[in-house]
Image (cartoon, rainbow, N blue to C red; front, side, top):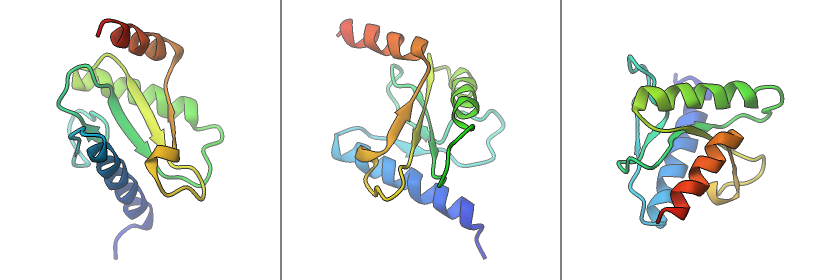
Length: 116
């Protein structure tokens, strides 16, 4: 029998990949167990951050740890920063979920957008 937490996480990752596809962004899931953890999703555009997807009923007290881990994964992937895309209770679309990052990551993102 499959681990229920692993199944929930995989479903959330697939949902984000499918949502990004509706926006014209091609993202792939990264297999678990890689030597250098690079996040859950890979977007083959160097400007994109590393994305770690979470599907927990409660994120209280864990968010700072998740963001630190996402930034570590970004370093492993050669990305400037990481983000955590996490499911909201009773919200099925990733468009309604939360995306969290540090203030430094946010200002980096704003500078990248301003350069376009």
